[in-house]
Length: 181
Ligand code: HEC
Image 1 (cartoon, rainbow, N blue to C red):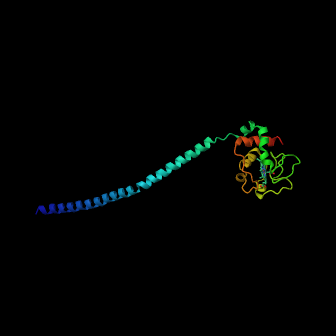
Image 2: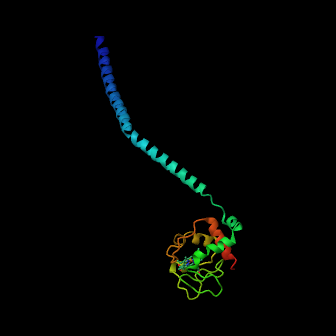
Image 3: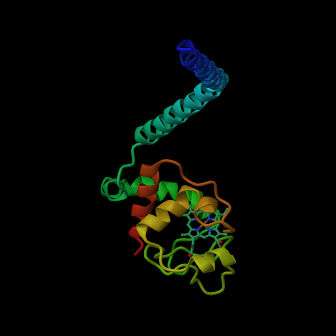
């Protein structure tokens, strides 16, 4: 008579324990499945890290490249400019431009006093609409950019000239153009 309630307790305890084990096993199965799952994803995660590293490396090298092509301020280049050399370089322009006060327009407009002159204002020259839209005046910086690579500086210009790559050459040429002021 005394055993019956204890037995019932034992049975209930056993049932609870079984339920607990079932729950726990589901729980651990979840963990194991989860671990396996994240294991599958690991290469993807590593690949992402690799891509990030590559991007970091390429960003670094781009910074290095621009650092190696050190930009000397234009004013400094102009201060050290060789005007005689600039005049010699202007021969590259003479195929299309004249530089004297009464010079005619050739393939390009006359460039007398071009430094600080208004853009696209030579009478009788048919400028491209890109040049007309550019507007403003020919500052040192604008001349420098334009002569570097005309088609890059003003998309749609009809000045078919490759450009002058060396910054000091451009400064020499612009220094000579300024003597025409
Ligand atoms: C192959 C012919 C050609 C050569 C070479 C050339 N140019 Fe030009 N240039 C042109 C033409 C064409 C235009 C008109 C561009 C337009 O309307 O888009 C022009 C326009 C210009 C202008 C704008 C003039 C204005 O009135 O606003 C400048 C500045 C200029 N050239 C400078 C130079 C210099 C400096 C050189 C030499 C380093 C040079 N060009 C070489 C054909 C040439």
